[in-house]
Image (tube, rainbow, N blue to C red; front, top):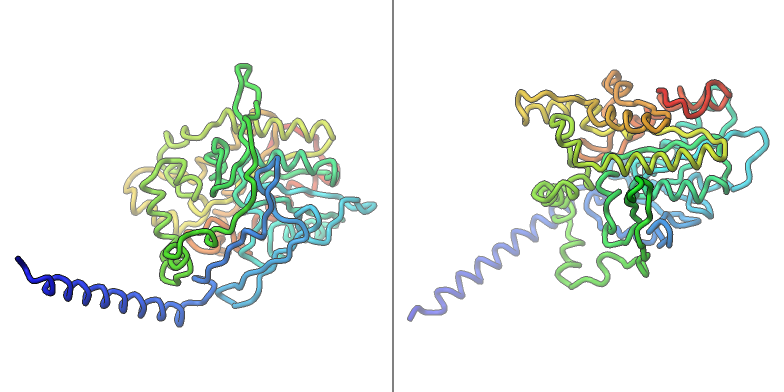
Length: 394
């Protein structure tokens, strides 16, 4: 019979050595890496449960995070309806036009200063062109097209905009068929036998619970570990790549639709088109302009990132316009105006990078500035009364 000490002592020494190694790494990261890169922040309190939308940005919010590059506070403030800017009111000011933005985190822009987000930059662009205008941002993190549609229907009469702009993010397509996101129930629609939208039974989550507070002690320790927080994006991406299409799409990891035409068929285009058509109908009934654009994904607009993908896929052709063109075709087929952005970004590489990091789908201030320029070229003339609504042109 082997001596137990010959097993226990080496195993104990190994565990102690591993623990010491991890402790050194943990301390090293906390000393060397900016704290915003690894500090755990539960943003649950930035949101509230909504019986129609599933969840929505909280009203009268004033929250913030430190920018890990500048160590400055990035604030996010909302008005009593959860909209940005925080000082906007429901009644319109005489002689001032209004544009309402709906979408997900890609229009919220919580990674950049308030004055650099899309609504603020678009407002400045339009004002520079001599248009008195307020641009309102009704975005909320994690939303899909269906939630943006419902939010638009909630707000369009309350805020009486002249134009609604809907920003489509590439991960909307998995969200449109999901019933749960990050553990929170969400509304969902299907097409009935007459190809009309039918709302599925929906029960809102009872309450938002802090992600870590109710977990086990090992889970809480891991979530607060700097080592884990630094590795977490890669771990999440790896898990998603090993999962199904929906899991990868939610995280924005479906670059294959730029080089695999069949990958585009994973999306439910009929459902998407029906959602856009309902948004257009709600706008038309109120004589409000409506247009759609696609958030400029890293894989569509940033050449160094595309070069990296092409190095991985070999000689397969890469079409940066594949997703935008398909969305354009679906949108225009139901008579909705579409604003292309990819070529505008692609032709201005010297002003990049356009995103917070090569693997982060959210734009930095330069990305929002380019978006604002391209959108202003459409919005300005429309607000001045040029052209007709709903002609489906670009």
